[in-house]
Image (tube, rainbow, N blue to C red; front, side):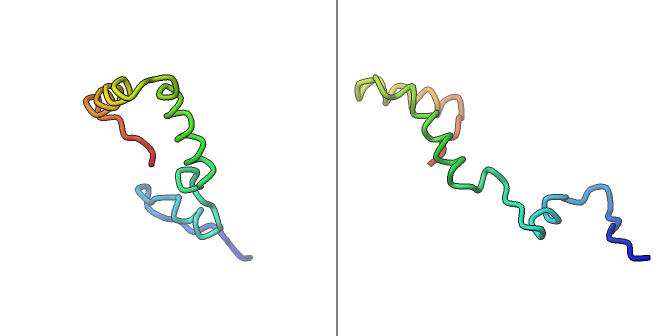
Length: 68
């Protein structure tokens, strides 16, 4: 009988095993990066330059990381 289950300690990162089977996390897929960049930029669409800079300062103060 062949067992495909391999026991590992409880602290093991399961994503390593998933990656071996071809899984790519959404945070690394370009389509998801583009999607979130689009939604992050929505509030900036109707702002003038001074308002955009002020918005960016608020994000920096709140330590919100922008997707680039």
